[in-house]
Image (cartoon, rainbow, N blue to C red):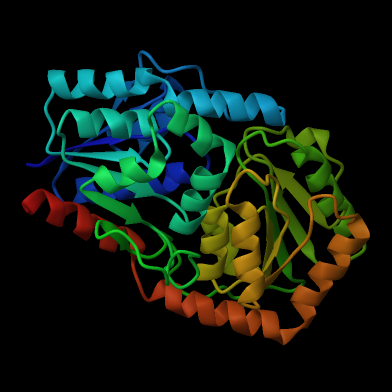
Length: 367
C-alpha cells in the first residue's frame, strides 16, 4: 500500500480541495497522512485521514479578524519559517513515505523536501497564473527570495506541479510552462446544473478567513437584498458571528451550511472571488457577483476572469447596497449571464478534477 503524506495549512478554500484529494487517495487503497496545524485535526480526522500536528510552525489563526499588515506578516512567517520544513523531515524520518504533497505556498516545506531528495508535489488549489504573478512581483515573493526560497525555483524542483483549476480560465494556461506543470480541472461536487427556485434563491458567502472589511461587505449585501424579490441565504464562516448582522425579512444568516446543499437550488451566488466558492458556483452553472476582499490574493483576477467570460459581474468591496442591488438584479434578469455560466458549468462538470488529480499523483508513484 503506497504511503502519502500531505503537508498543508488552512488558507480557506485549499482545505476542502486538499482533503477531497486525500479522501480519493484513501478510497483507492493508499495510506494518507496529513501534517497541519492542530486546529485542523478534527477536519482531517473527519475526512478519514491520519493527522499529525506541526511542532515547530509559527502560530496561525486564519479565522480571527486580522488587520491587513498582521495577516500578511503572520502568513509570511508560516510560509517561510523553517519550522514546517523541519516538521516534514521529522515526520518522514519517523515514518517514511512514498510521496509528499505540499501546498504550493509552503516554501519552507518545498525546500526541505527538495534538499532531502524526497519525491514531492507542489499542489496549486487555484490558478497557477495568480500564484506565479503574486509571488514573482508581490511582497511575499520578494521576502521569500531574500530568504533563499524563490517560489519558481521551488516549484520547478518538484517532481510534479499539480494545478487543480481550469486551464482555459487560468491566466497562465496559454503560456509556455515548465514540463512538470499539469492542469487537472477544478475539484468540485456538482453532478448537474442548478435548478432555481421561486423566488430566486441567492447565496452570499465571503472568505472563511478573517479578511479586513468582511462584516461591512456582508451587511451591505444584506441591506441590498431588502425589498428585492429574492431569498438571500448568507453563510459567514467561523470568522464572523451571524448575530452581529442585521437581516431583512427575505434573508437568513448562518455560520455554516454546506454549499453543496444550497447551490443546486440557487439562481446566483455573491462571493469574494475565492477559487473554491467560485468554481463550485460555476460548476453548478450559476452566475456570480464578485466583490474581491483582498488585493494581495487571487480574488481580483478570478473576478476579472469570470466577468470576461460573461458569467458574472465584479464590484469593489466598497460598493454600496444600491450598487450591489443593481448588479444582482442584472445578473438575475439578463439571460446572457445565465447562458455563459451554464456553458462554463457544462465544461467544468465534464471533468472530475479530483479523480484526474489523483490519477496524476498515483502515476508519479509508479514511475
